Image: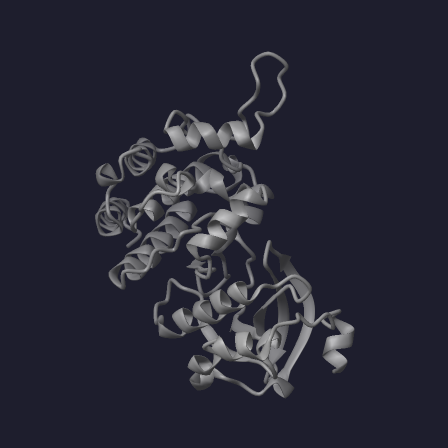
Length: 307
């Protein structure tokens, strides 16, 4: 109760008992933890559907994700349950680990994850200039991102929302992927809410066509452009007439039609640009698989003796 008052989570959604009973929250019984051991400390991030908090659990730092209480739909809550269930099945050093979940009733559901002390890749790139970070350092991040995708795709899991915000850094644990919860429906909703996620999305995803794990490889190509420029994709796109930034809707149309590619600066290693361009093929069948990209990256890193 005290936590509820402190963190403004008092707005309880109104659902029928039938709707609530239809939720598969019992699937999380094996990862359920005692909430009395959880102490929320400060908000780390705010998303379209959820917030992430820094907390301590048994005295150890953790990250806690919870849905916005005021406007959460039963469908979003089921998606959240599915996300936690999916995370509980992962065991990979390149993917953020689930610690467990707590709830008194379904609308209170909290996902407790390992805390990554370096924040996300987007903020890291935004506060540094390309000249400040060596490509050797960037290769270490790229290697982990690819290996995370290899693992997910080996399980037949499509991330669907790979972007720099969903790549977390840590001073000792390295770089890991997070945020697998986004369902196809959420993706559509996120796009209509005007959240810039579509800048990383494959054309077939924006067009709402059938897509496969190759959609993640397109998004990976977009992330490679961020490593080159440190900017959000298409940040440099200006209207030639008035010099104003091109509106999101216009960028979206160009991405969907495959008539636009992100910028790579001249300092970017040629092999990274070549790899990105393969990943950014409009035809999903022409994109390399995560395994193929992993092979290219590891071969390259052996040449310069990192791996």
